[in-house]
Image (cartoon, rainbow, N blue to C red):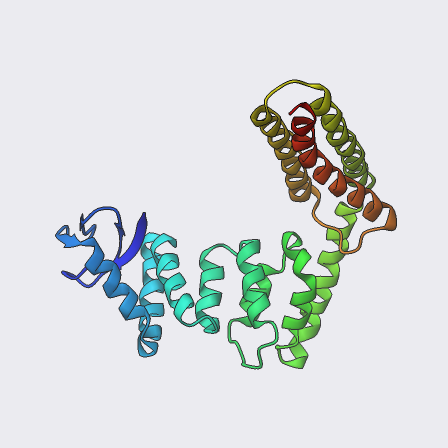
Length: 263
């Protein structure tokens, strides 16, 4: 397991393998105790007075070597000080404004009353079509800006939402989704009948069910990546989704029902 550490020889921030008792520092090339280096960093990051220095060193590391090491170090600081917004923002920025990081940042700081000098930078980079599933949180976060700066981002969000919903509610997207709910539900129910009348062992039934459901989940994931989510869903979609979700429970139960009938 690779973890960030401090080299006790040169005081640089590095990565070491926790499984190894000793590691070689990539910078000074001296042999160091992996446990000592990891513990030193943990202690260093747990002191509030060191946070600014850690941030400065991580920014320099990111510029010189990329985000892998600084992200690992900042995650330790974030564990100790989860409401340090600057640390949270830097993690989002270094991670390329990935949706999961954006969501985590917004969920924690969207209602903060503190002024954030990086708020506009965050909105400029994070407000994209792929992140519009967090539109509600962006709307709240925008209120943190000075009043004369809000309108630009409100207009941008309106434009992005139009693009987001246009793709996700297109005839092609909904046809694929409705077809999947109907077809997937029928397949799941058919599996139950198969398991009841088939003489295969329980473990094979479970393996088949897991494989089929795995393919179905993969389809939903790919559909979401291609077309995105809808902010609101229709009653028809809600009904089909409910029936499909119920068929999953039926399929899982069918594995055991078929086995119990033959037992």
